[in-house]
Length: 462
Image 1 (cartoon, rainbow, N blue to C red):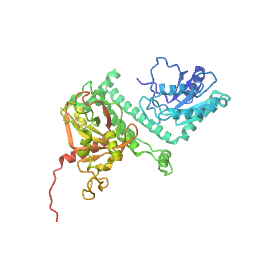
Image 2: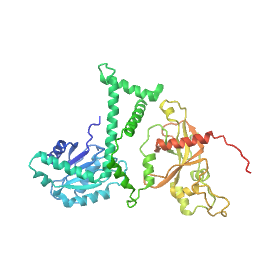
Image 3: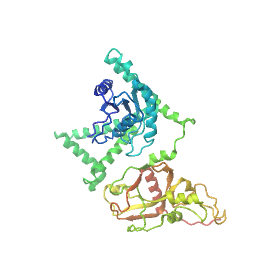
Image 4: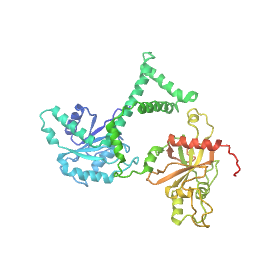
């Protein structure tokens, strides 16, 4: 049971110092956890805490009064990497005035060494800001109540400065509230059974919801997935429709339209919206993307030479239209995929016989121009032809521009003429490369259905 969620972590080698801060935060209404840390990991496993937004850090964790970049800073990085999940998200770091001169160098040091974007297993993001609290000033206050008030005021002021982060934490709170409301509703239904055993009554409620999704094919192997699918729908509805607008947060969001602010990579935004690079399950699910198997795979699907197949089925090319660099880019970065498109209800109710896939291609953004329809009358053989903007043949469908794990932009092209089915077994086509999220997948499948159902017609031009 995940009950160790704290928004604030306190790192100190001295328990009396760390607990004192924690008590002040508790009395001020903050959830905080003290961690005694001196760099001795031993056999303790990484904790992978998520949702931490403030880290109080004693810079002199070795307690020798000799803070140095080579000796002390790596121990602080080690603490962050050991306790924070790589997907923890933004947090601010707070230190004491005792080590004020070392705070800025530490901040720069962490910025240079912790990953700037999420890489699973590499470490958390660096802190987004560094703040210093005057511990002596707080200690001089006459009573504990005054000290708590000053500590709370300092933290609130830091968070107000980061109004964009406040927008995210407000959304985070809305998500948590919606989850609590959903759980409360389920418990209320269970309590109406009134058998005297609340746990068993709740089990019946869980089973009923899972049954609504999985119907007669519900088993212990898919029960959790079916239950969570229903709960996620309810949770989304509560979050989306119970929102009370906050005009200050709305103003903060609109300030992002300022043309003087730095540009954000649209391909990275699209990737967050449409792709999931986490590890997949043992069996394919709708939207799962696999690399087309190499020759000699032994599966009942055609064996192909990828480069030649891409040029024939996803590009409109003549000999000599690509230069040497473009050919190299095609060979090194273009890929051929199998995208699972079996209907979700068939998965949930175990109706399908074989898995159904559409063949798709990863086309680097630099080369997407070679996929547009070309005018065959506009150039000589071996020279580039004029192309019709971004117009594709009707049998191809293009995703928005997205990015790979290294940030390189590309498009996914789907070919409606290349739909295949085979009896999937774990491992026969390797690991999942990524997953296409439902909104984009639904658009593509809708296009594919229209392509497959078109009748066509003839007409005589005047």
